Length: 468
Image 1: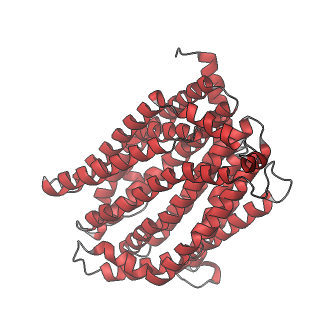
Image 2: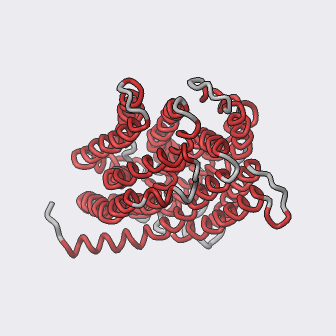
Image 3: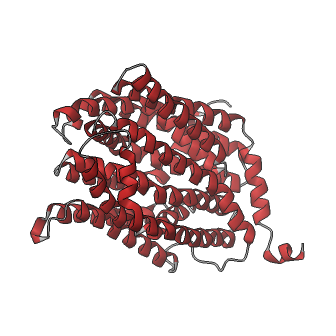
């Protein structure tokens, strides 16, 4: 495929127009999470570790919501591309209902076994502080898990609208929601303006209120004429089936990533709670600086690839996927390298604890150096998602997490005695391997043909299905 400069710039302009609202939204979201870390760091390193460990479990509703959101954005973008708005709206409706239902068991989990779930992560350490970490983390977890159905609905609603090409409405909603969350974290966590100082409870309540607010707004907007999308009474079983087919690997990918984080964090805790806190801070620095751009471009890649396939142009879908990946490399990759160069002063904004600072700088540096590889992986995975291929990214991430993120980290940190440096090697190896797998899948896979077959199947009317 030759390089056409004008065509490349045209794709970059379109992706930029689609992506910048997502970037703004994600910047506010990561700023919200960074605020949570900043506020809890004012309490103690144990509070940071407690929230970080609770967030491992909190990623379960996040992963389920993102997985169903992947199905929603794939079907929404493809049906928008070919003008089948009735099928698109039915896919959105069914995705929202599925998300709300799947959030209910998580409410029960958080309310019943939250503290025990945090405590089990300390089985590899005899740190006397682990009991306090478990108590703090369990309380935080119970609060945020109570709004899991709302979290799912919020994630799915945003991605469904993005698939239609409307990336601004989710931005507006989430900017308000994240601003509310940040404000409440400061007020309730620190006891500002006469409010009680609730510390971790306050931070958790802020997140829960934000989840409910966001879900409510999306549900209301889809019922009005403000958005081009809306609700349609479910009639096509094939849509629910395809939503699950596309979403299941994405959910599995996210849940596997979350599952691996448990032994990984337990391994970190074996080197001390301060090392675990350093990892949380180092990764948060990276996510605050680079993740909003990468996630924005990933959404843009999914939209342009999905809509090109809906328009019946597989060659255009491939070109625009590669073009978006190159854009991400030139922007996010460069920013990551700058982050690595200035890791120390940035980390010191979060903590001055001597046992935490040095490893936190190391984690921030390695994440920055890995950014060029990471962004290519994320964007090509997003392009595959637009083509309804969520299996290849699952394979890439699962093998990378098990073989490098966890496996290589254990071998180098423990067996070879490298200590914290071994974790740096595991992180770099994970993203490099994952990129190789998704790049091969995007280049040689048959995802475009499969997407065309699925669209043809969805186009069958309920009457035809009954007649068959």
